[in-house]
Amino acid sequence: MSLTAESHRIPLSDGNSIPLLGLGTYADPQKTPKGTCMESVKIAIDTGYRHIDGAYVYFNEHEVGQAIREKIAEGKIKREDIFYCGKLWNTCHPPELVRPTLEKTLKILQLDYVDLYIIELPMAFKPGDAIYPRDENGKFIYHETNLCATWEAMEACKDAGLAKSIGVSNFNRRQLEMILNKPGLKHKPVSNQVECHPYFTQPKLLEFCRQHDIVIVGYSPLGTSRDETWVNVSSPPLLKDPVLNAIGKKYNKTAAQVALRFNIQRGVVVIPKSFNPQRIRENFQIFDFSLTEKEMKEIEALNKNIRYVELLM
Ligand code: A2P
Image (cartoon, rainbow, N blue to C red):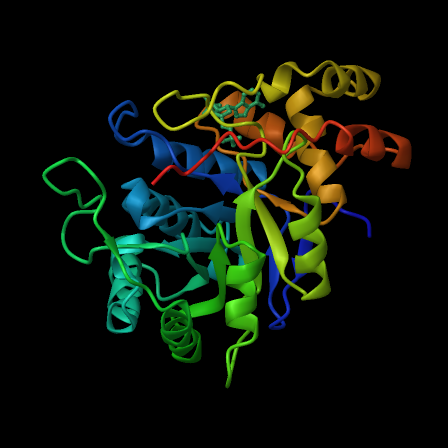
């Protein structure tokens, strides 16, 4: 398959398609000046990105929506050119909350539909206003979840046209099987968004997902921001890796570009986050070179099976 800056969509099992490269938009809201996300999404669209990954819990979905709408108003893009992925948060798993939660996201975005709506995590928190509900000892208050029932509510959102495609995130094989084996399953999850990069290549999950026509969307494809409040920094920085840098040197590319190219070349969607104009552009320059089979194997061999994002919730 030849991938180009203009054409790098891959098919989803429901007949839709997803661009292999998207812009991640999570940044600590405390440390990120207002408007930065909006500007970054606009720069990304001008650069050629057509896939934006966001979430209600990133607290900047309104900026993403505004950027997309402004670019449509400018005539730069049409709505159907853009692929936006939103996420159902942990406090909203009860089936009766799923559609209202997606409708809230659409209201924030001021869009009529999302291209992909995914269950952000397989475990649930107590429903309510608190995004991270905690008890008096500071411990998270969990909530029982019936993922199959939540999934049926997701299916209804697709049927209503509010989400073109539906998927999951942070699901392991067992959790995927719960959905895939659900009696009366109407729509399969088209994707599973999980951590994926050269130090965490996900060989087994990738194989399972390939067998079931589920696309892996790799988050933290550059090895995260290494923010110690949520990242396990005991694993060394990905972008300092000597192999990635040596391969990059050969092609006049950075380690970041090699890490991204590695994943898209094996059919894994990547959503690098950057709010820096130069790096947003850098991360898009991955369609003008390709890695040899030997280089792909060398990069695969870097796998350490250690997550940066441990999700210790
Ligand atoms: P910034 O937003 O300042 O560019 P990931 O997508 O793996 O979570 O990585 C995101 C982190 O990597 C952010 O801290 C981002 O910072 C940084 N980053 C994004 N692109 C690059 C790049 N090409 N080279 C180095 N760091 C990058």
